[in-house]
Length: 87
Image 1 (tube, rainbow, N blue to C red):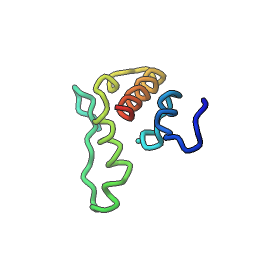
Image 2 (image 1 turned 120 degrees about the horizontal axis):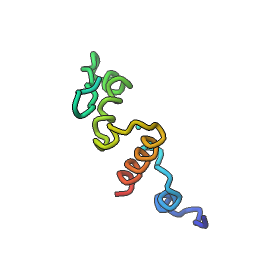
Image 3 (image 1 turned 45 degrees about the vertical axis):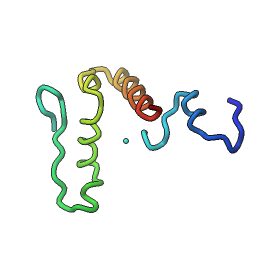
């Protein structure tokens, strides 16, 4: 890939099909959504993995929730995040 030193990196990442660094982030029965517990502390509790992970899972496309193959999930997840990153 030939790009100048001072070029913006977004087009390069997109052409390489790489995700930007910021995108590398209990179920309900029918939709396979996770229930996020309420944090005990407002400041650090909102950033805890147990709080953030269910919220991120629930933001994903519902089609990702029903894939059984790990390889297929990884592929579809990357495609989902790639599209979200470069809207």
